[in-house]
Length: 196
Image 1 (cartoon, rainbow, N blue to C red):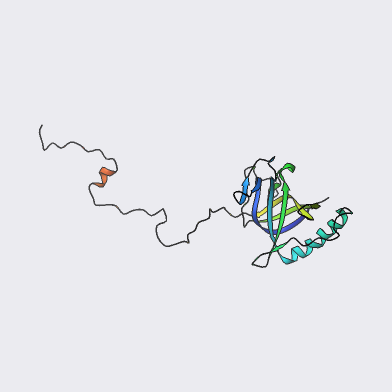
Image 2 (cartoon, rainbow, N blue to C red):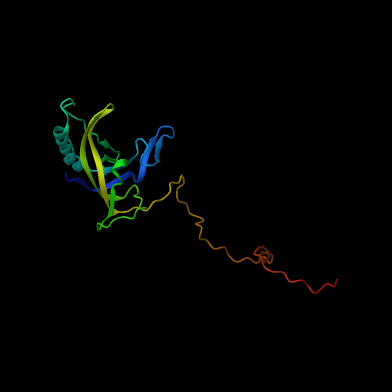
């Protein structure tokens, strides 16, 4: 089955550089080995209403074609609407299936250590996989790979706003203090004014 491609979407919570699993103890996703229970690659694609309007009927069709007779007849839309009016489309790939492909805009392969960042713009390819478990049923979007169209450089989070002031590149004005040389490790020659 050919994968479906969502084009020009924004990456949110990209965890595809290595497997991750959710730790209830730490209340967050943590890197892990591929054989850890629940290990997976995950990515949420922020999509427009037009994109999910196109996607939803395809998911319903995949459910009708793939559901077992004992499964429910219908599924509910899994999309989560964001504050800016877009929709989060969650994709996932079990770690046991291997890492999803990562390509650049020219279709060249990303290096093994490439780490996709939130806010980057990309095309996302996935397959429709109907499922039913004890926790529910629906159509999973199995992540096949991403094509990065615009990469956003990673910036560590900070609680501060930008301010006017010292930037780390400010050069101090020369000092007139003669003792400054001593602090810089200058050699002091003995004075000839005194005899011992």
